[in-house]
Length: 322
Image 1 (tube, rainbow, N blue to C red):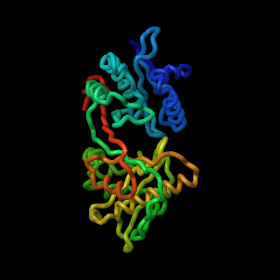
Image 2 (image 1 turned 90 degrees about the vertical axis):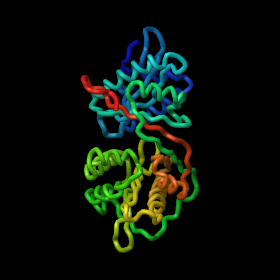
Image 3 (image 1 turned 45 degrees about the vertical axis):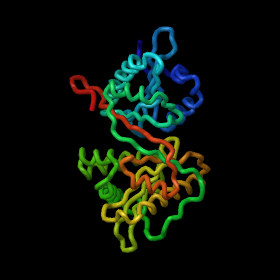
Image 4 (image 1 turned 135 degrees about the vertical axis):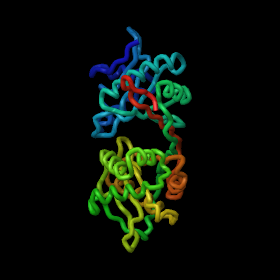
């Protein structure tokens, strides 16, 4: 068995690994290539001489980043030797990820399976991931906006955009709202990097995602006290509330509903103005039930669950698993 990246002339080999998903996979690849989140040379196949591919997987990243961030389109013979093929495939591509500068790689498993990745056989997937060193990071609830009028934005807060307040003030606000967060990923970054560095890194990652600077807003009470922030964005393929939060001293007063309403209205306004038919999707940590309840109240509907797994990329002489 040989693992190799695709050449420019054989992308069809990658797509053909799952013939029943050909159209969806082709469309997904085209959109991700155009957005800068994927590249043909980041698509890998496992093959034997003269046979169709035994498996495939590809790297994905945030637009503008040079190193891989996640694995997508993972498929191996789930009704056959999925452990043998999958282990060899993933071990090789994790080595490649390290060579490209990645320190860790994420892979998610959605329930129910979502287009265009159709992640059937979820428990076999998890078994394979764990076998090559992936560890569970967190579970999230997935929400979507299913149509209707934009939510009303109560008038009790005033909003100032990123351009109005400046980057430093915005990062400071991100640091404040992350204090006491129930989101395990953000909590972990605060513990690992320190609150200020974690906020700055999150800000830098967020602004790689397409957005209108006017969408990113801080919210204040009538007397000028900071309440929180909302950061809508447009990742490849959908629109989202990238981040929303309330500072600790203002929690418990329903302000998160105001922030979500403002962010949702901004996305729906842009969608209508631009004739954009991309869906509105958002995720929240299952541990953050207050945030999930706020999405429900504002009019978003929970449609799926997601499990996130992460692995350190191999480094010779170092452990490969978290």
